[in-house]
Amino acid sequence: MGVTCLIVRRESRGRGLASELVARAVRYATANGARVIEAYPIDTAQRRASANELYVGSVRLLAQHGFTEASRPLGARVVMTLAPARPQA
Image (cartoon, rainbow, N blue to C red; front, side, top):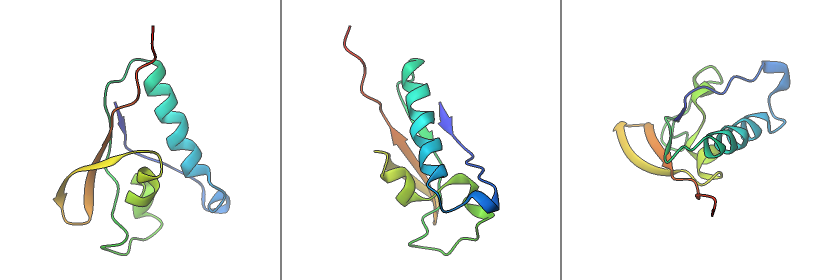
């Protein structure tokens, strides 16, 4: 499963909604059996990004939710993954 877009309207930005979207996506993926979740954010520490570019999220945002860097194919574009904890039966 992949987290590819986080769309938050301009007037609603700065309220933690992107973080909540990531958290809910992770919960949904985990509840539906995802073994690995991928995301493709921009590393804003390496390159400044406009608000319009950040629909993919930032490395910092995804790292706050436990994602780790898997590869860096295009400089500031990063592939990050999360292997959610499996519920015990």
